[in-house]
Image (cartoon, rainbow, N blue to C red; front, side):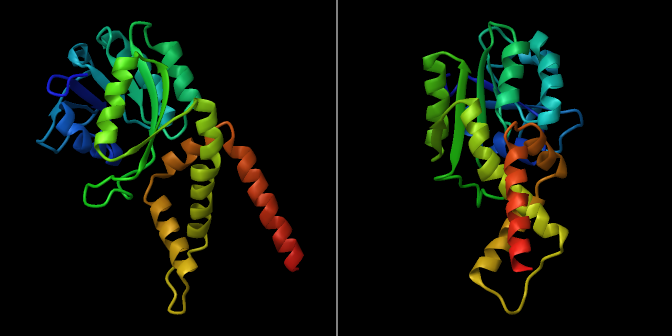
Amino acid sequence: MEKDKQKIAIIGFGRFGKLLAEILSPYGDVFIVARKKINDSSFKQIEYKDLKDIDWVIPSVPISSLKKVLKEINPFLKRGSLVMDVCSVKVHPSDWMKEILSSDIEILASHPMFGPDSVKDGKIDNLDIVFCPLRIGKEKFSGVKSIFKGMGLNVVETTPEDHDQQNAISLALVHFIGRGLSGIDVNHQKITTVGFKRLLQLKDNVTNDSMELFRDMNNFNPFAKEIRRRYVESLQKIDSMLE
């Protein structure tokens, strides 16, 4: 991937799609595919048919929409181009990309472990991005990694299964706890502690994301339900012990 020549298309222009467009703009010409007209003159909006000229396609859509989007874009993709998902789960999206996309399309599963709320003043130094190489040449994969390393990100390579097992705890469970706090309307207290302030920050961070993302990261992660069950069971045991 040559920095001054590659064309990058981001499908979807929500909060995260916009963030991706901004951080990738120094590394190529960024185009946006979106159903509605975008209100950002920094990026040119294109259609599916224009993907024939694109080197790197990044669907930034809800997990529940990814399979449909992959089927829609597959006929228009340029031979040898790269498709990289950015879903917060990896097993199912990886399977979908391998099943749906033509064999002459390179595919890379990824999970940027950050979002608009964790990026301060446009800086993403020392945050993580996870890569699960599925069908991608060494040279192209090396080029992608160098781009994100150049942003100051830490690159983590693993399998889709290992990613989802770990993220069932480090992401889905965290959001589950945060949503639980929001459900009982926990707010700032005059008498407080450092731990409580961290809980409020957790609640605010997870509730800034959509309920659709919360559902998807749980429903499409094959390991999340068991972790939730164990956590709820633990709370019930603690509650019984107190009584």
